[in-house]
Image 1 (cartoon, rainbow, N blue to C red):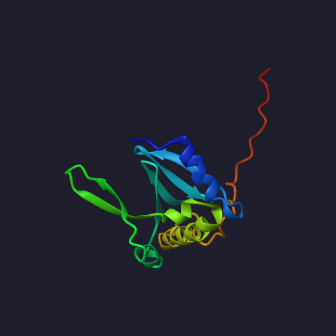
Image 2 (cartoon, rainbow, N blue to C red; image 1 turned 90 degrees about the vertical axis):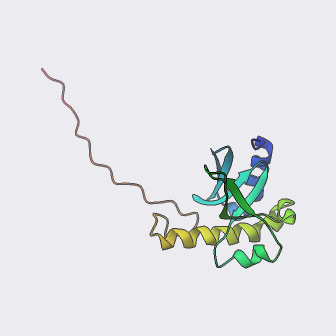
Length: 142
């Protein structure tokens, strides 16, 4: 089942705490949610799963939140490092904010660990534009 556009828009609004840029991209029948350009959540069948790592997994595990799972080609279930968001977080932006910060932290740590392009850059700060070479003006042939 696909995600509803209204649900994706609702999540984007909830996750914008502090003026953060939140974008959604369709992928594999679901959606990926990005905060300040970092992949922080998966939405599948109108269920939100937030990114976790060793530093924040206990927050989610304490509430018994299940992981996002998909079926592999050979029919096995594969869990990912994304756990279901608590129901309370879906009620308003203030309740969602600490969970988004936690997942953004996991995304930042993962990016820094792999030396990604966003490593060491403050959230919300855009990447420096690539230098462009000067184009010389072409003169018409006479």
